[in-house]
Image 1: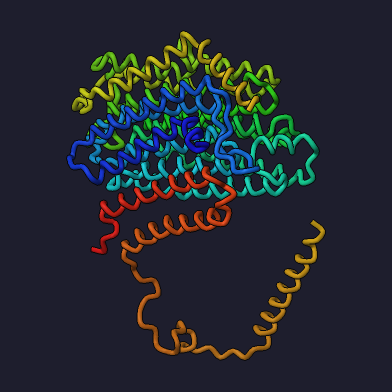
Image 2: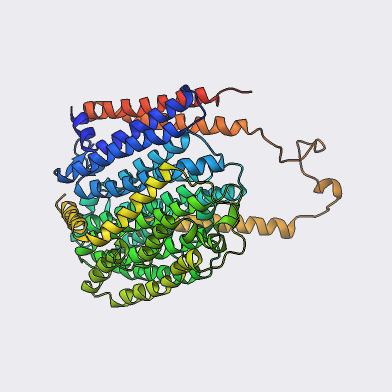
Length: 497
Length: 117
């Protein structure tokens, strides 16, 4: 009974796992070439899981799956459920973008959707992890799914290169992360977050070892969120992966890693002198990420690569929130969550427009700025949507991107991190240049040769995905209060638990 | 930390012995190289072929599947040791784990990954 109770507390995970396993069985037992049912089936699974995650927002924080006398590996609280809802929404949009892309790229396979669902399971486990080992487990479940998805177009050289690069460098970063966990365990004798917090109150004997462990842990996480100087894999991997997967990777992996980081910082290392030692380390990473990410995005000619560097720089803005949180500023937790939500919708939307515009035989050529010339007139609705996403990514009102940055920066000001806020604002100003460049090529560039129309003009899934993304970005920009209040409540549940 | 100092000294001595013996051998030992001596040693026979041979990619799938079920045993053994302590929670958790793994086996079977053709 204890087991069943535990399962009902993490219904989103159970539903997703069930959907993914059924998908795999259908893939091998049922027949038929058309895999649109697989997309629809996973959409249903994601929607049901989303419903349970939102329902779980009101529930009391529960510590689950604890052995006798042991700490709980999974903590189902409002924070975990809210983060799960964000990731599920991201995966939902990513799945909506997929069928058309798969048809064009001819990489049809039922495993595609099952792998997305498995990755989301890993992300939710990360968000609900009560100890560092469970966090690591979730990270691996997520990563392995994404490694395979990156290389799922097996006949494409760019995809194979991307998958290999991601796998090798990801494995390396995992080593750092695990080493960090080992050091933390060595210094404190525990990996459970609440227990760590208790250990931190008294001065710890092995402080240098603990700091080493924390830094190594942060290096591993920084790799996953593609923070400078651990971002080198990102542009190639983002370019080579199937476009819907690039979007999924950019939002889901990043959200999961940041949410887990917020939980680790807020629960495990709150009020400890050791975490104060690593704040400069996170700050330096944040500075570098914002500046380098934005500067490198300027020089990109391929829109997919530009979005890759833009996603690097957005990791930097979110890191500002983590620094503020580590300084003890509590509003930063909700700010990071809000930022990740807005980022999820605007980035997935931008990649959705790319899916729309990529041509069957175009390859890398159809991803250049030049290929988008005049698109704003040929597809007016698409032009408006892309403009909304670019404006949001640049952080201008009335979009979610603006309020995301506003909340992050104001929490950083409260924490006294003026330098980081200045860097963030500078970065946002730089970013306006390359985001508006997309709009310029949509509306203001002469079309020398119109070329063939994009192939994906009549996909209901794709249209629905773009509408959801646009609606998400605008809703967060016009009614930000509800979501930030929800985030604050969720963050409170974190501190109670 | 202090207790590990002696182990470090042991490492140092071991390394020094190895270094001294190696230096002595290279300084004092007679050297008469000739082409036959320089060839790779293969049990006294002349070498038959290149050292790096191509391996069928099928082994890769077998190795992959082996690891999965190897890990399963790695989990099952410690679980069996503390089975009674964990109670029903541990039992059903493990049942779920093995069931999912079993479905995985069904999947690879139907996909034809177990056929050696």
